[in-house]
Image (tube, rainbow, N blue to C red; front, side, top):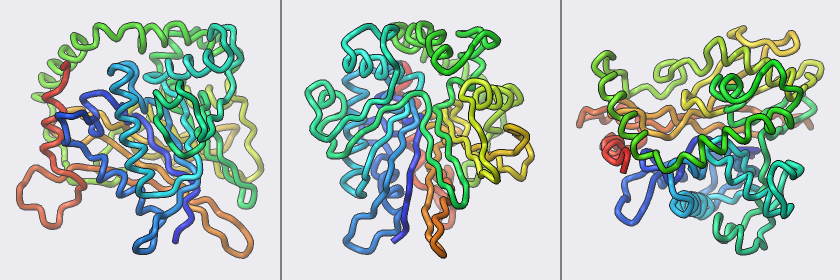
Length: 372
């Protein structure tokens, strides 16, 4: 059986009707079973046994409190987690908050410290299995300890030297660091959050009432835009064939700014550094060999876990599952990163050898629910 150190997902947008994972009493067309089956097979368990994953890292925009009613978002979260836990043993769940679920962080902090968020110390919260009604209402009777952290989570090994830096990705985007904060005046991580919180809560929590109008307008724009693009291949499941660039020039610069100035990371000698983020819904990776991003004079590897929101009926979302396998050899533990994509079969009805995980009709059903 393989030793799986961590599995990371982001941008599931549970509760949003456009998510591939959306479920209610009427809708059974989703890929929860397919997705949880694939995750459960990562440890390569023996027949009749459940595999083991040390950490499930939920990298933000998991329960979509921006686009869905809280009860629907949390009900969808419970369904997903319970189905996954039925198939694989998970030692701990780490929830790294994003922008669409930022209000969850506000609620957790205020509940824990009994005062207004801006007056609180923003620190990690560990919820044990024996949780109370506040947590049961949101996460159910999950029999796993949950660590809530914002905005980063880090896994490190010493020999060989490696760091895996998990961040949702909103603090790398132009929308937040140009539109909501004065980038040049930000001093540190706490200052960045204090500057961004008010606008983030307004945009991704308080504006919920106009979502149906916003979604219908977005749908109209997307469908008009389809006339100007060729139909993209739905077959590819590789990083190269079926993904947009995961980072433009602005985002590459913001990554360097965020890691160096804001998080003040200090790379160790011969460190293999990996930045894993989501938010953009454009999954894929930039390898060190691409010589694309330097941090403190050294190249790092960048991964994007994509998103699970259906963009159009032409192609699958860039929905990636990132994982770290732990191998022990000659007394050394090596952490090996990898990722795979969940993708729809091609439109053709006869595809015995085509790559794919789920029927394309699910995409059409997701699109039909936009704005509803």
